[in-house]
Length: 319
Image (tube, rainbow, N blue to C red; front, side):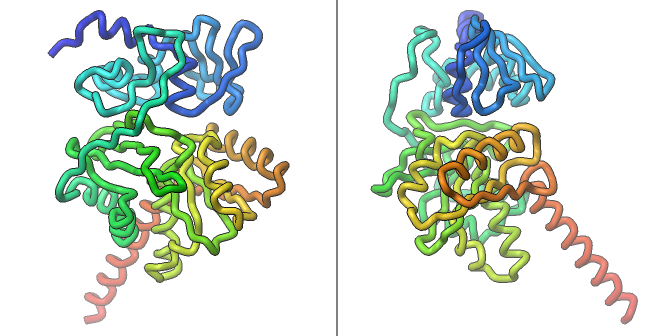
């Protein structure tokens, strides 16, 4: 079915600054006739709050729709539906109210999508496609931090100090769909916490968090090894989720930034580590070898499978 032209026009008119603030947690300073991102100084939005250019990526455009389709590689229809919050995605986060372009978004109660009975797609996506350790997936499901919704998306849930869900992000098991549930508060990120831990390992996404935990299991040969470290997903590259976590876990003395091995991740790691060092934390930066820790995990699994095949071949030859 063709999308109504008025809906597309609404999507094209979405406020770019408000979108980045809500979607990525970025903050902007208005100077010199443009808005400059404080987390990524190479990202600039013009005073019309529509035209944008990300200098370090060498890409720009006009409006949120351009960003989602060109940078996030999101299909056109999906991008439009996410921006305007049509009935196709009513339980997902509309990035802004298109009928009141300059009004700040209102706080809403977190609405979690309905669970699917048996999470077949979740296991297929996380364990088979992404290589995540099934023991880790099972543990997170039992803790109600992870589940599959009725659309087949993986849902990652973050809780507040009262064990109440306050944040949830979505990851499609087909395509590259990503988003936050309606009413999500990014101060309460997806995390694993253990009282005795004095280090906090910080990642961009829940999948990176689980990937590093899986790598540690492989390396140590112990299915419980991953449970010795506290971990936090920022759901991006800003530190919105860090203050709450650190306030709740006063034993943390060292912060280890494990953000992506790309321009945005490197810039964020440098900026956040400097900021946290000034607050008295010990800081380290441990980027992945590949683009992110899931790339590292999959490379490790591929190498292990190749080694296993080689050993099997040698045994057959010896026989």
